[in-house]
Length: 239
Figure 1: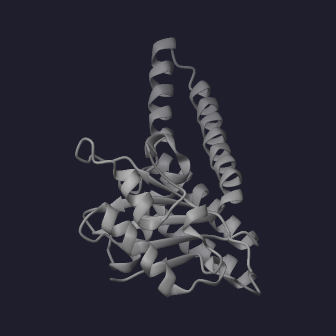
Figure 2 (figure 1 turned 135 degrees about the vertical axis):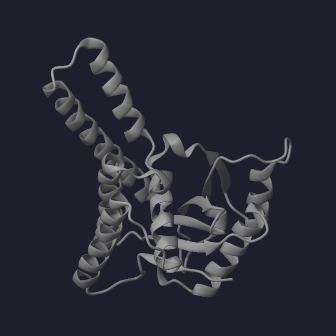
C-alpha cells in the first residue's frame, strides 16, 4: 500500500473574476519556500535602505522614506503592483518555478472557480482535484493535509474552519492574514496572472506587464529544461 503524502494548500480569491487560486505543495517543501521568499524581501529591503542612505536625507525625511519602502515591500498584491512591488513579484515567481523545476517534491498552482460561497468552492476544488488525476497527487490523503486561506469576514460563530475541515476530511484548516504571509502573497500574484491570461485581459500597467513577461519566460525556460515531469506548474479548473 502506497504511503500517503501530506500537502499544504494556500488559497487566495478574486471575487470580481469569480475565481480562487490554490498554491499546493508537498509539506516538507513549505519551509524551504517560506525561507526563500523571506530572503527575497530581506535583500530588497537592504538594497532600498542603501539607496535611501545614498540620498543623504535628513533624519525625519529618511525615516519617512524608509517607512514608505517598508509598507510597499510588506504586502505584494497583483492589484497594487508598482515598480518596487513588481521586483518582489518577479523574484517570487522565480522561486515558484525554481522549486517546480528542481523537483522531485511537487509544487503547483490551481486556478479554479468560485462557486456559491467559500465553503462550497473549497469542497468543489477537492472534488475536481480527484477528477484531474494529477500524477504527483496520486497518494494525496486529505486527512494528512492542511488548508490555509486568507482572512475574510463571515458571520460571527460560523465556525468556518471546522466546517471546511469536516467537509473535506482535512487534518486542519486555518485562516491567516496574507499581509504578513509571503506564500499567500505568491498565491495572490499567481492568481492575478492566471486570471489575466485566461480572460485575455489587456493592461497598460508597466509593472504588471513586466511580471507577466517574467512568468512566461520562467515557465518556458523550466519547461524546456525538464526531461520528465510528474506535474505541470499551473492547472486551470473549470466548473
